[in-house]
Structure formats: C-alpha cells, structure tokens
Image (cartoon, rainbow, N blue to C red):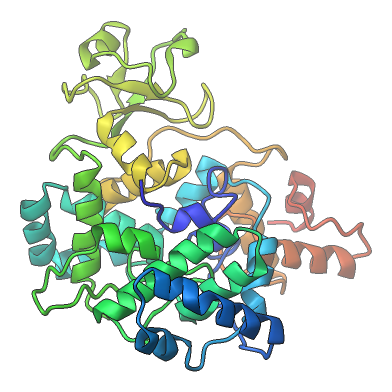
Length: 412
C-alpha cells in the first residue's frame, strides 16, 4: 500500500495517539507545534545537490525554484522525528480520546452537515459514509487540526537529516509533482511535522496514488476548508483496498463462560453461525448476522471488551495496521451513527486504577489547583505535570504517576 500519515509515527502500532492522533483533554490535549525556519548552510547545500535529482524525475526548474522560495531548515521537525513517544496507549485510553464526547458530538454534527456529500461519495466508491467520516475525525479532528508546517520544508529537513533519507526524498519528489500538477501552491501545501497533509492526512505518494477531484473544479484539494476532495480520496483509497459496502468493521460481542481464548485472534476466521454455536452473542443481544468469515479480537485480554471482526477490519488496516487505530475508527463510526459506548469493561491498569478512577483523579487535582485541563482519564503530559506539581508542593517523592494512594490523598 501507499503509506498514510501513520507510517511516520514509529510508535503507531502501539500508541497511535500523542503526536500521531489529534486530541484528548486531560492527558493528551492537542497543542499546535510552533516552528521556526533557521539558516543552515548544510541544508542549502543539500537542496542544491537535490535539484538535479528532482529534475531527473521530471520536475521543472520553475516548479523547483518556486517550491524552495522561502523554504528552509526546521529544527522542530528533527526534534519530533527523534523524540517520538515511546510509551504505549491501551485500547481503553485510545478509545477515550478517539471516541471522546467532544469528538463524537462534532462527528455527528459534521456528518449531518456533509451528509449529502458523504452519501454521494458512498454511491461513487462503495465505501460506507460513516467510516470515511470516522477516519476524518481520527486523523484531523474533522479538519480542525490539519497541520500548518510547510511540507517542502519539513520533508527536505527530514531528507537532509538522513535518518530515512531515501524515503523522505521519495516523498519530496512526490510533493514537487503535486505542485507541478497545479493542485496546490507552495504556500498552501502545509501539513504535519512529517509531511502528512489535509483533512485525512495523506502523505505525498498516497496523494498521487489515490487523491481525486470530486468537486470537479480541476484540483484535488485536500488542504482547503471544504473537505469534499479529501473525503472522496479516502473513500477511493478504501475502495481500492477492497472495502465491502454494508459489511461492519466489527461488532462488540459477549463471550460465553469458559470461552477458549486460543480461538481468538486476527486470521482465525469462522462463520458467525459457528461462533454462535459456541455461545458468542452480540453485546446488544442475539446472534451476529452473517457478514462473512469473522474472527474474535480481545484487545484488552479475556476480561476486556470482545469484538467479532470482518474483512473490512483488514481493509482499514491497509490505511493503518495498528489494531487500536482500526478499533478507534470503527467505534467512532458507530458512535457517529448514534451508537453508544462499549458495553464491555476494561480491566484496571497497572496501578490498579480504572478509567473512572483516573478521571476522578484528574477532577480532584484540578479542584485542588493543579489543572489537568480536562478529565478524559488519559494520563498524558498535562496530568503528569499536575501530579508532579502536587507531589512537589506536598513534600512527596515526585514521580508524576497516578495511583490509588494519590487519589485517596486528594480526598472526596
């Protein structure tokens, strides 16, 4: 496949949040990166050496010179690339962010606003509208967090840095081809620190392979305020990956007592009727309809929520193979269509705290004057800082880590 933005996020398979997913509140709220372009003679020399290689790929001198007018080295990009988040997010944390009340409410509102457009896209590409909308929601918080770093500068900075030089030079050539085609101007070609662009965060090679002009204005515009071309491009991506219209990504299920968990896992497909014969039931009641071969997935182990997943789960994996990402997109799509929270419960974390415990901890810290800036139950930088400040001011060992002891110390 052509890689989407997640390919840039080294921790995506385990995390798929922090820098790689927009948003959250108390633990992981979004802050737009602040960047500066600085003088760097080595960068300038690299650009000069790259110029003939770019022209060898069919880039004209005029396109190249226009693209690099004002471009430069961005230290922030190197910092982000070398310091990607190493810790992992649980599925519970992931869903607390990707299906937060704020994101669900905005998703339902924007789905209604663009319902006609999404229906037309569904008719054209055979991809369910709510899945396209959910990817939009996970990738850029429904277009509100598209990134504002100049793509030519960011990709050139990464190619010049050399850690993944060949990959980023490939993306850079693709970005120059996009400019040469006239779909966007250099000043409007902005995105994330790693060069992913637009409402659904396509990298340049994905754009060349899948972007479409659904509005018919002659440009494949994924950067503007109108998300139409970006949404259609995402549908085209999923269509070419083999999406089946009307087939769910997955269904939350309840397993019978004594279920053999060795039967669970991606690729261990059986018919829904076979699973039903073992006592597997939909969480909403009854048997799961036959949508083809299905596997049972237990992302939080045998005591957490369980899902019966279908082939469309694997299609979303072509966009991003991280299981948390796929479940997040799928669950958000269900919530957008009016579905409720998961019925299954997640086990306590390593500190013995449930999501409700962590949310209460954030509320108590904020009430005590140590603002976590929200109470989503996700322990991110802001909550860690608040815990550290509380511990420091009370003469405690400064760990920044949540605990039931800390929750009790904060009182009711």
